[in-house]
Image (cartoon, rainbow over all chains, first blue to last red; front, side, top):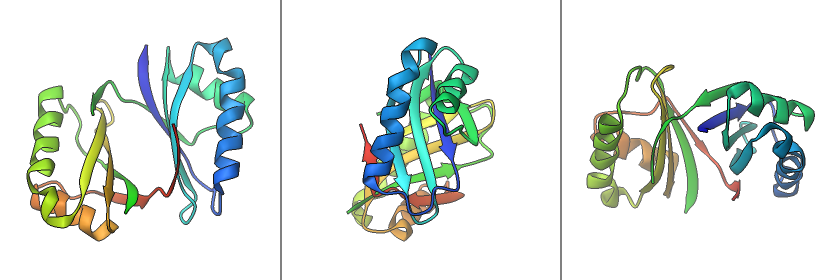
Length: 83
Length: 83
């Protein structure tokens, strides 16, 4: 399993409720792909959303987002992390 | 205090040791600006690094990164988050 950071653009004005709704939509279908979405962050002003996930591949992460109705614009594996 | 996600490009081939070194360089000077760098993720293949921080402003976050020798290419406030 690899960690992935994906980025969505064009979500200007997203609210906390909407961010929660799209995250729940991911959680509802992620198990089929062996993916888990851990965290999400949103900048309503620029319309940027970042999602952190674990999964077998970027394609699997994208399939979850696509099935949930919001394909990502970029997906980067982030095998290195610090916290 | 606001959370910020910043992005660095052009760090192809970054290693775990190098990611740790740049993160430690941030931690060494962050207090002067009232910033705290919480986490960092790196994609050595595309050369992209993401940093999550708390701070008073994007400018303060950038001053820490600049003093540590690696100014960010993008800094987004992320007032909304889920985890």
